[in-house]
Length: 227
Image (cartoon, rainbow, N blue to C red; front, side, top):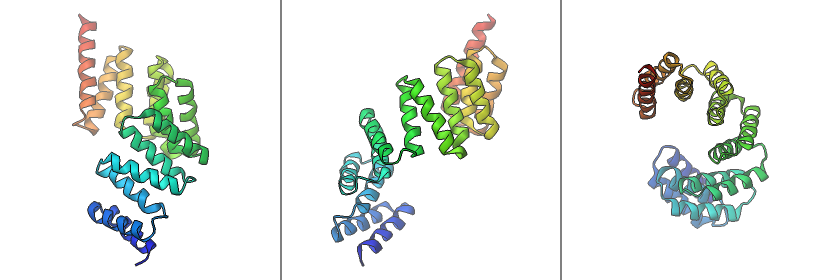
């Protein structure tokens, strides 16, 4: 069995979540041709996304990138690994490397924008989210939810509400948008609307602890406002 056939066996096992078997196939592929990057990359994805063995994942991603430095997906997935490891700076560096290869790589733009939002680099984050809307319109409901959260952090309540509304117009079952708009209504003392949104979130996700906590905060704020 040659390298490509062995690699295919590994991918098939991985897709069916037979991870131990997949790792064996990828090890055989590396033994057949250690100069090919794909087996390292697929094995790294198992270690990173499924087994949470981050040291092994990093070793394999590094090797894959050493062998093929023009694949944006390799850098993107290593960025995800760095986030799992808590190294935001290294993740940003890899997102930028992915975007240097493919400036229209929507996932990298999106992830980078969310990091920038957390870092309070709001102008750059908003620019990134608008770019994702252009490149990936089918993701608009999620992107508008992210915009709603961004404007919420900026205390631009009208724009935040507009963004959450757009999100829910596109996906009326989107729990995260109901939670975001519910929290916004809570801040605005629009308690009935806040309760309705958070009840919707809990209707669609009854075990969502975050939605439960937002509802508890709403009840306390409402009680304080009425006393």
